[in-house]
Amino acid sequence: MENSLRAERGAVSLASHSGWRDQSILLRFMSIALFAGAWEIAGRIPVSFAFPTFSDTMVAFVKLVADGSLPTAYLSTLQPLLLGVVLSAFLGVGLGTLCGLWRAGEWLLIPVFIVLQAAPVAAFIPMVTFIYGIGMTAKTLAVMILALPVIVLNTYKAVRNVNESLLVMCRSFLGTRWQTVAKIILPDASPVIFAGLRLGVAAGFVGVVLAELLITPTGIGDLITFHRSRADYAEMYATIGSIIALSTLTLIVLQWIEIRLFRPEKRGA
Amino acid sequence: MRATVLRNGPSPVSASADSIVEVRGVSKYYGSVEALRSIDLDFPRGKLTSLLGPSGCGKTTLLKIIAGLITADAGTIAIDGKYVSTPGPERAFVFQDFALMPWATVLRNVAFGLELRGMDKTKRENIARHYIDEVGLAGFGDKYPHELSGGMRQRVGLARALSVDADVLLLDEPFSAVDEQNRRKFQEDLIRLRTNQNKTFIFVTHSIEEAVYISDRIVLLSPRPGRVSQVIEPQIDRSVDPERIHRDKHYLDTVEEIWQGLKQYVE
Image 1 (cartoon, rainbow over the protein chains, first blue to last red):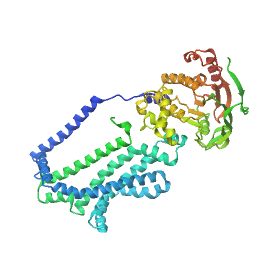
Image 2: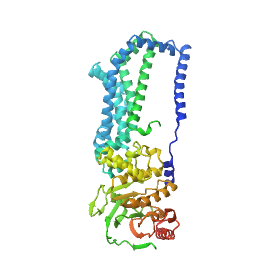
Image 3: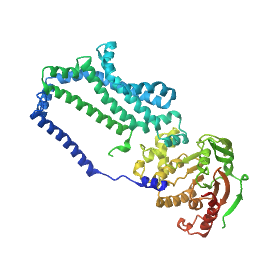
Image 4: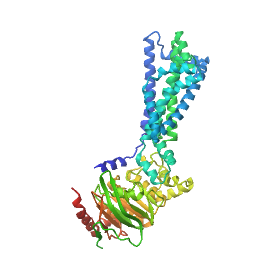
């Protein structure tokens, strides 16, 4: 009974879905168009005097790019963001792997990260300012506080739940400990590690915007605050929209890297 | 042409002229459950020996002990007279669940044993290509495991084990996760493959028909605790068309005889 079920599952081969793929791209564009349309209508009613239309927001976006204020703001925001995200990614995957492989590491570090993940970490940001001031260090730390726990915990879980039968296979073909980690554990864990990285990067964006709203009035956070105070709502929404778009774009790039480098079998799937 | 029953009962087998694997006094407990009791067995060089028995007779445990993947609580395993307790280059394993890396192509999966040994890429891929052709997967080198059927995946597992050029191939119920039609074809191919490869096969199965069909020797194990109950050498001529073996009288008689012996352990 069990065997026949397994055999059935094994015999399933993947059919190609090229027609469905074209359709899915079309549907995605429609979803964006629908959203923009709803926004435009809501802006025209208007829902609130502080709610601009989609078209006004787009015009404001072009204006902000043209007058250089948006690029300047991003120059200042991207530095701590990039630094914090890259540091969190390497540190997080490293620590997570270590905890997954090494019992003592697990007991020492995992509880800390579980607490950190559960805590409303934004509350720590004023504390970070108190200790590190209002510079680049504080902003980078804000990014890391938000990004690191989810990356560590996902990596740890992925490494812990690695496919047992592949480990046995590697051992039977005389793989060393190091080969097992590099050739089996990390590739097998990579989908869950990357899921953690995506959540971590998204959290990093939250961190940097929070830091700029709460600590240092610079960059994107400052641009948002500034336009709000002048009641330039179209500009404010354009700024907010731009950071959401950037965050989404980063996640798509990350997914592309994952499939490119680690899971070639999912290419085109 | 009658099947020869070599012995009955748990007394040790006398060492045959040329046995490559020698199992002496192997016992294994899982907690308080006695999985194997004092197993003595010799596996003749160049032959295919099946370990056959109902579930719970410890056949897979014995195979994994020979592979060095499980440690025995007592007893020794010798390969070519050398005691072993961990995996070694003279043995290669074929897994019940295939154990293929889903992220690697067929070519890389087959070459993986050689990759772990540090052989350079061109060399190991040439060897892997040879065995991919040998197991009937020519042209599938660039596919990923999920693009293959169960039977084809197990062919990849077999090619991987052949690539490392071990003397002893250990197969743990290799066809149990393969559907019936593919299994028949694969068994026929295995018989053909054996004539080209000068290797010793140890094959775990719970299918009497399968064991009789492909084996030179069948070791019957009885359950709770796992012991050797009988060793049978089916005298079946495999040089004829494999299709005909299934209708061969000796094949059918041997299957029946083994069934009569195992019946008592099936509730």
